[in-house]
Length: 337
Ligand SMILES: [Cu+2]
Image 1 (cartoon, rainbow, N blue to C red):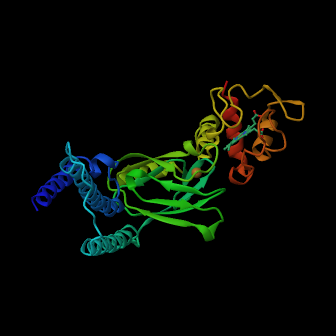
Image 2 (cartoon, rainbow, N blue to C red):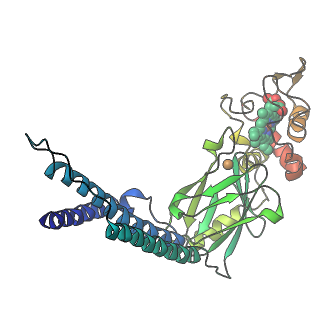
């Protein structure tokens, strides 16, 4: 009996130590930056407690038995023979059953919390593509960074242009796969950011060569800053051609594949491209003038830079970019010397 008392006390002490100082949300999770995270972190907390207890229970029994009931010098006898223990079997069937049912109950409560709809939620469309994020706001503003007002429920409506991607901001906790297939396959995710700050969106579904770099910035800002930012994002650009061109290449994710520094990412670098002689994969060369660049954007597979894969550049920019935007992009590329 005294053994059980000692083991019981040691188990409680070990549980307390683990739960208070090792397995805590503060140590193991990034900061909590959304209202949806609260329900999820409470579940984590329950799990840390259970893990601390069961880990302690098993380890304390194990170590205690090894130490206290070890074979002493000169003890050559056989161990005692057991034929099972029905009471123990019943206990360790019923107790886990209750725990699992309890977790299922708490889990469905948390799910309901996380999916709670606010009829006034602010809608943002998320378009994922290899290896780029694009965000569209209600009045048609588009951006490659996600900027959100604090304390407003955001309804993300998400689709993919190619393969399956997954939207994940660890600080918001919630995560959602994004599917190709158009309107019918739009996935929704609700987030109510409640901390100001800058975080990263990462794609959490292996989606090809540059999956690891499919990141985008997300900033949670005050309502008034948000309004100012939004007004700057419209598709109207009244600056000079080069600056606007720069804006379009950032926005359309060209820079995920084209560097401005000479480094080769997936496509050729734009450094010194304009006016250079480009070797094509059919053995000819062409001067990189306006016409060549425009053709490379509209029909990337028709003149393929030698050594590169002509199918990797998305063929759809002709649909999404206006003629004026393409002219501005050409002016921008021209300026990278
Ligand atoms: Cu992805």
